[in-house]
Amino acid sequence: MHMNVRKPALQFKEPIKPPNRTEKRVATYEVTTITPIYGGGVKAGETDRNLPIRPTAIRGKLRYWWRFLASHRQDNPLSGQLLFEKERTLWGGLGDKNKDVSSAIGIYLKQVSKPDIKPCCEYTERKNSESGKPKYDLKFSHGIPAYALFSGKGKNPSERKTPEDEPANVILRNLKFELKIQEIRSPLSDADWHSVLEAVRWWANFGGLGARTRRGLGSIAVSGVEPLTNRCVESFGAQLKTLTQTDNATEAWQNAIIKLETFRQGRNIARQPGNGKQPGRSFWPEPDSIRLITGNTANGYHPPVNRSGTFPRAAFGLPIIFDFNVPESKDEPPKSELTPAGDLERMASPLIVKAQYLGDEQYRAIALLLPHEHLENLSVKLKFIDYKLHHQSRFEQLATRGRTEKNPWWPKDKNQQQELARDIKPLVYAIPCGGQKAKDGNDCDALTAFMNYFDGKD
Image 1 (cartoon, rainbow, N blue to C red):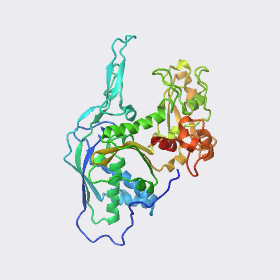
Image 2: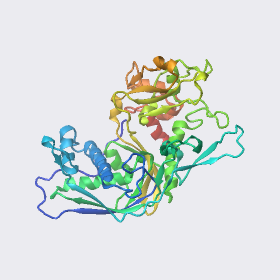
Image 3: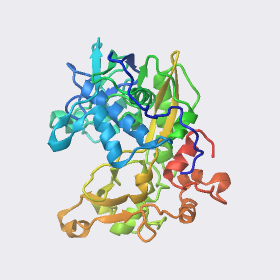
């Protein structure tokens, strides 16, 4: 994606000599959660009542943002061995002769408030079920948008067999603690120290605590940290879109998630209206791509309309589950999972959608698109995970898609992108002014379309 690049707000130039001092610098912050925390414990997806916030987890998140800033700054970005060595010097890691290098930065927590832990959702049994079997209505609680944490819904009471089938617990907003960042090996250069503080700033603005922070869980307000501006964000190759500010963090979060949910699954934007609660057919090409691969077309009632064979929503992160929610006897494709090709099972989304704290009890919904050059070399595979044994040989072969013209998950060529986008209703947002000519250097893809859709501008 082409964007105007400006000078970064913070330069990381090394002084000729380290400062001549012996005192250890300290930065102290008051942190308050503004949305519920999902996970955060030792075991993935689980909360820990005794240790709700772990210093090692915060270190990992600061380390991520430090690495992002160091590798994407305009002035002398680091890469390869230089990035590895600088990161190890500051944050620790495996050194020469397989000896651990201790971190130069200490992370300390004090005065952690008592966590208020609740299930993220609840099931209510319907009365007078016609089938005689219990049926349940699902409702997410505590202001959590269902689309942000649908994987935590668990199973309804009649289907639960293990504790893992229960709805996931979350730590409700307003958890407070004091965070202290301290040099533990002195002296660091001014540039190194300020690079750590800048990582704190980006984490406070765009990160959070626990899991699924890229969908707004665990967002935080941090004392003394200023909101990042569009100018600063763009100087690191990212793009920031915002909505109107509000005095309600939950409202800002919900507004952001609604934008993403509507763009990916909403009626009239991402799918046909349908009948009643029954959703209509998707405007996205992935269901038809799977029908082309399997040959299942609902006995001819759902022949593929889009025959591009593409999977543009892979850009939002992987895996993606495709479930047609019908018995196999209906001749629709079996449940399948789109993952990165090779050994990896996941790919983090380059898109962050959340509530951002602006200070003075003000918040806003934001969409932050991080640099995503890695998508240029992404290949994906489709794995069928629900089918009858006599179909096993048919579905064992993985349908692999690279970003190539012959076998695309989404093509590299921008003219080809634009040609395909005209037939995919949500992607029209990536084509300015009705789609006659793409902007020079702009991708015509799902991420571009969403960022244009988010704030209603092209």
